[in-house]
Length: 235
Image (tube, rainbow, N blue to C red; front, side, top):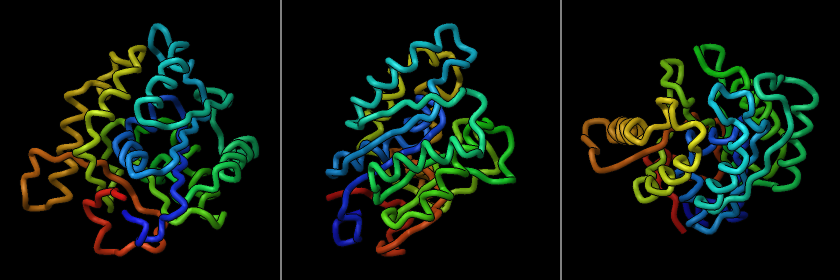
């Protein structure tokens, strides 16, 4: 995407439930936006301390290190891990960041009644963030990212080519050593999924040497529709 596409304010807000959610769903895309000169802001609504791992308290420190690799700022809010709700407090937290950042791009969790097996915090966060982002005037692009666990209910309609930024995504996720035992955090799983989405973006081409992140497009303004498949973010 270039300035000619209308995204000239160059501010991205990624609203997710837990530390590491943003990196998993869109770490490569966030790094690409940062490389293109955008200010990138990540918000995690919880500290993730209710994770099943041995040292969940490490996630806040790990999140800061991960955001630094991407070149993003990160804010970790105080909503209860495991109990994020579609309620006034959640709306208030997210709305405050939308007003503070005035983003042209908003990224959050994919949410759908058909989605199975995804975390309840993801669903609540994605629903509230999407609802609020559609109400305020600044966002020209609203994207919902792939759930961390493979899910047949996620059907993307936009692919971002992150081949040049896959190393940063992997390095950012590698900072979460406290979560490293989870299968979807492993480098081989991350590469396999990104390679798979590149194949889907290319349809009949193999795309073995390319990597994509997949999204559900919620809102798009001032972007050429022919660029919506396998787009590259540039200056």
